[in-house]
Image (cartoon, rainbow, N blue to C red; front, side, top):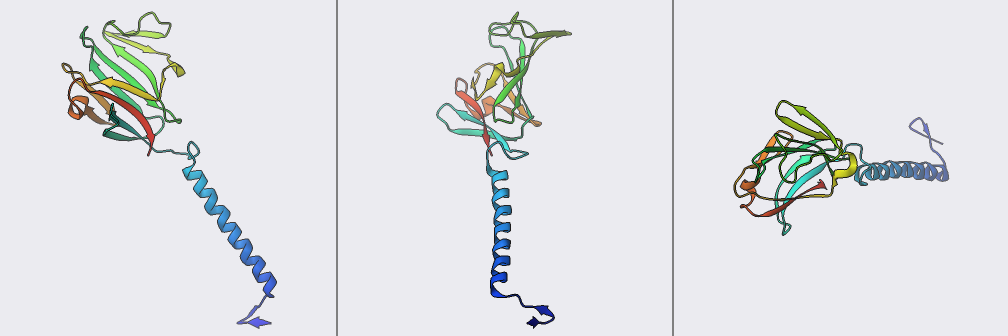
Length: 176
């Protein structure tokens, strides 16, 4: 049998072809869905770095991807030394402390800990934390007397613009 120059296949063969096509399309769709939506499986996962007050009220967020750096800058409350902490967003959705910088040792700042110290001008740089400083949440308190800046991908936020001094906050990386 022919239909407009084509041979009409028997019903059984047409059903086989239709089932194969449906199965092929289903495999492609399911594979694409799993590749995109399974956590940690997407080749370029998108996260956000969210800032919450301690009562879980969202105050601000930044869109981030693994490898992005997050910089927290502030002046040490008792010693007055400027402090810079540099974190990196990990593939696993954690923050990793990469480096700390300050002008002199103050209370609570690293010294003689066995990490890598270098001195550049009047700045002490501490690196070598590796996975020891892997943070699911970074807890902070908004200072009443000194500015605290959080910088992510060129966007700078003053913590005191988000909440009054004394407010407890936490930063957390979340899937976007």
